[in-house]
Every structure is written in structure tokens, then in C-alpha cells.
Image 1 (cartoon, each protein chain N blue to C red):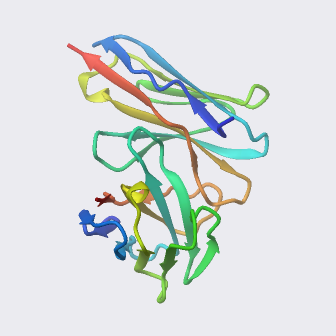
Image 2: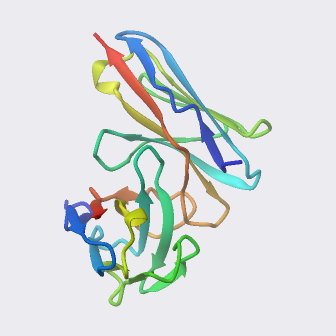
Length: 115
Length: 110
């Protein structure tokens, strides 16, 4: 079946601009996660949704970052007033329930470059 | 101190070699442990979960030592296709988020 998909695959923007990154989880997966991975680093947790609500947003670096999942499936990560330090690969993952042992399935990521 | 620490490598080994990766975690409340594999410019993929009793999947063996807060991954008879970055991952209690190490880079050479 279809895996997690993310669009766009690449996004180049200028400092100060607004961007939206989209994630389509595996159908039926109630848990959705956003991570950010900088070059040479492991992924860094940003936010986790259970259904429509953000169950844990402790990883969002500041108030320029916001994410929504209005219908409990597709999620959008929104970044305002982008900065060069926001350049990274933004990874989305989903899992069936979100329990302690649920495997998280990752999408291919969106590579964001802020010039 | 980072929550999950790994030797970043790179490890360069010949085909057929046995290679071991180590990882330590700082939170003693951590309950779930995983090894993920990530190929260059690709997303991470689950290689195996790590259980207290240790577990094996073909050429791959994972071990967990809770007392020392230490996780290991052993790859036997390494193949060229094993070349990748191996990421140690920890989940704490009911917390859903994964905490990742930096990853250990492996290059298997012919």
C-alpha cells in the first residue's frame, strides 16, 4: 500500500518568507509526527499529533513554527519568517496508534533551503 | 550531555567483516529502543527493535544492557549493501517521540 508522502520534495525560499510543508500519512494511522534533520545530525522531534490534536509540541523551536492536522489525516507544518538556520530536511512519520512500541513509518522528507 | 550518544564513525570495513556499533542513553526511564538505518538522502527505516533479552535478525544482532544504559548492534558477514548510517533511537515511557543519536556511518568496501 501507499506509504507516507510529503510534498514538496524540495523547497527553496528566501529569508523572511512563509512556507508550508505537507504530509500525507499512511491511511488509517492516527498518530503523526514531524521531525527535522540537519546535515550530519539525527532527526530532532518537533511535534506529535494523535488524531486532530497536538499531543506534544515540545520540540517546536519557537513560535515561527506551527503545525495543523484539521481532519486527523493530512498535516501541514507552517514556518513563518524563515531563517537560514531553518534549512534542513523535514521528516514526517505516522504510526497506527501511537503506543510505546508502535513503529513509526517515515516519509521521504522535504528538503528546505532558506537562502 | 546528549540524551543518546553514538560514535559517528565513519567505520570502513571490508566485505565479510564483523562490525559492532555502540550507543548509550542518559534517561534511565527509557523503555523502547530501536536501530534505524538511513541511506544517503533517504528517510530512516526501522532495522530492528531492541529487547532486553537481545534479538537477532539474520546477520544482525541487537543487545540491550539496562544497567549500563547501553545498546549495541552487531553486523556479521557485512555486505556492500550494508553501507549506510545506523541510528540509535530511544523512546521514554509513554512519550511518543523518538530521541535519536547522531548516527554511525558505515562503509563496506569490496
